[in-house]
Length: 145
Image 1 (cartoon, helix red, strand yellow):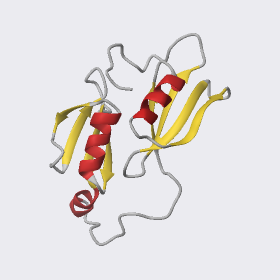
Image 2 (tube, helix red, strand yellow):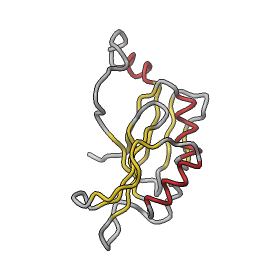
Image 3 (cartoon, helix red, strand yellow):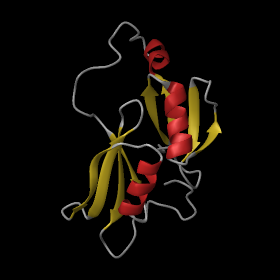
């Protein structure tokens, strides 16, 4: 078994597409803004982020008649390592991102992190390692934030 991507099921596909392309800086390798599915290379081509219209996925799995949203705590979060949480925070703010938390040292996590949401409400985190050694999960040459 091999993990390849995270698929976000979204209500507003065009807005989310532009967010992951224009704000987060990920390259869409499949799909366009007017489509219902897209794949974004997150750097290195090994794993990526997929967007898919939420209602279409509900139709596929036979749950078309269930609510597509619920008033509940977050059930997941995507985390992105950056060189500097403070610089990325300012860069994303300049692109219109509203943050939930400012860059904060989380010594018990070993990171400096800030949190925000994409246009569909998915929780996102940018973080930098507080350790001397960088996180090995990030490949060099990534074009993302």
